[in-house]
Image (cartoon, rainbow, N blue to C red; front, side, top):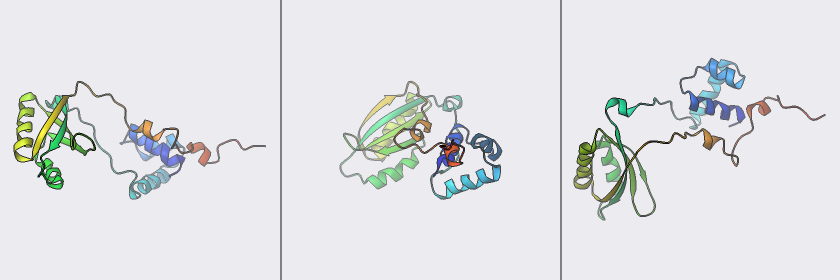
Length: 168
């Protein structure tokens, strides 16, 4: 991955629906060249997809919770993970080190629906203990900062195309 690929990733993070022409203008390449680079980023596994962002509150799903889960001693982790797909309110899960085994992101219409999720997790999925945290608001950060961190950043695209001033 060179600086141009890096710049393309940043542009796609900002607008995943950008056309190859628009991306080409941003990185100073022809649209066909941009298309080739995007396909290469996809085939290499760096670019894994394009997603829509949905306002869940507009759909009536205004209660978001972070739930720390401690499983019962006899619960198989793989079975627990597979079973999460049967709880539609659980929109993401991470396996953790430390005091809790998992952290779930749960989205519900209200606390009554969340209470039914708690009951399902305890009675059907082997959760021994949980601690929930109501999300007041999300702080938008995104991945662009991660790609631009100083210790791992790639050279700017201009340097890769020979647009940098050459020493005399």
